[in-house]
Length: 237
Image (cartoon, rainbow, N blue to C red; front, side):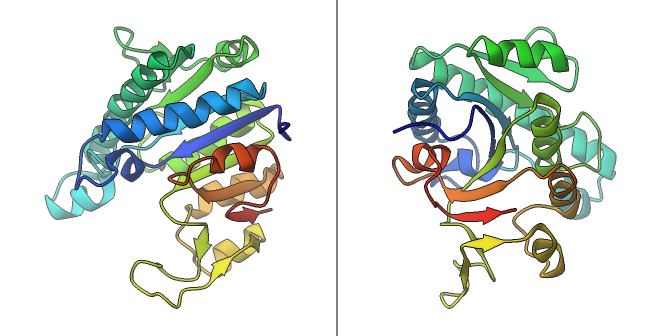
C-alpha cells in the first residue's frame, strides 16, 4: 500500500481522547492512535496533528453555564489541548515514534513554541508534530487551528478523526435515518449548516483548495486507507 499524500494534518477532537469515558483521557485511545500513526509513518507520509480539548474543558458551553467570560473559558480550553497533546506524545514515544509538541501559547517547560519554519523542519526530519493551544487566540476553534496549520505547513490534505463514519445530515446517534454523505462541496457544508467543522475552518480550506476527509478513526486501519487514497468516510472538496 502506497501513500497518496506526502504530508497530512490529522485533527483529533478532544472528545475522541475520552473514548468510552464521560470525560478525561482514555489511555487506550492514545495507544490506538499511536499505532495508526505509526502505520502512516511507515508509508513515508509526514504527519502533523492538532489536538482538541473538549474532553477536559469546552470553552463556549462552560462560559454560558458558569457565566464565565468567553475569553477566559477559551484560554482554559486551549490549555486543555496541551494536556491531550502531551498524552499523545507519550503514546507515540511508547511506539518509538519521534515527535514534538508545539504550542501557540508560550510554556517552554513542556512544549516548543510554534514557529512555522521549525515545524516544517521537524516534518522534513520525519518527526510527528503535535500542534496544541489552538491558534493561541480566543474565539477561534481547534478546527480553525487545524485548517490554519495545514495551510501554513503545506499539508496536502486535512483529515478529521471522529467516532462516526463521516458527515451525516443529522446526528446519527440521535437519528438512525440520518444520511451519510460520501462527498460534499465546501459551500454545501456551510449552506446545510453541517456541524462537522465551523464555517471559518471550512472557508479557509475552500480558499486554499485543501481537501478534507472526515472518517471513523476507531476502526482499525481506516487512517492508513484514507492516506493511501481509498474512499473512507466523507470527502469535502
